Length: 106
Image (cartoon, rainbow, N blue to C red):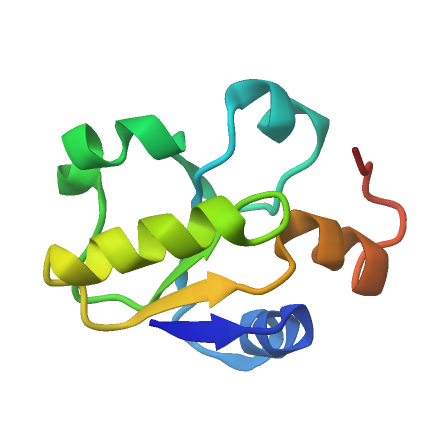
């Protein structure tokens, strides 16, 4: 699993023809406060049961609040055979602070 800085993700979202699969593993109340457009929301504790909703062939960027839960989920996905998994370093909080200052923070 690799770490992805929010600026790297922003550059990818702005330039790549095929967007990465964005997996937001936060709780619903967190997603209601702020989220990246196009993210698939699967709370961390539901990921094992909902693996079939993820495309193993696509780059997957796992997102949480600060990067701790997403790191754990990214490692889990690698153990399940996902080959191109990235953890969003700093999480949605870093995105709000460095990329989208108008985004709500908590």
